Image 1 (cartoon, rainbow, N blue to C red):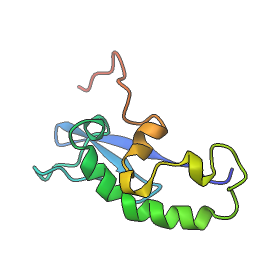
Image 2 (cartoon, one colour):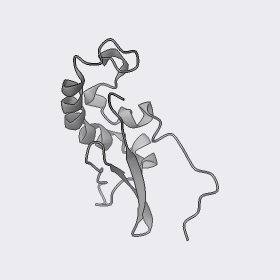
Image 3 (tube, rainbow, N blue to C red):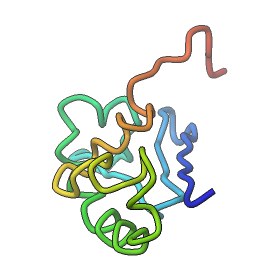
Length: 104
């Protein structure tokens, strides 16, 4: 594989919190809490855009020129760095709900 991406959500202090291990980041909400992935698909998406902008710029620089000929990996197929939070929707992280999952 040329690259991979890993996110996880952990149940922290009574709510889910998203951590992106690939880019070593989490997104803090105005309340000071760490955002859930699904929160970043709505009104808090601008926070995700800002959080991902610099890590994506660095990542894209490392990918070139290795993947420019590969469909799905080339520059034209990637989210724009100014809208870095779209990476989450692009790879299917913030557009999900897991039916039947409950936390004790």
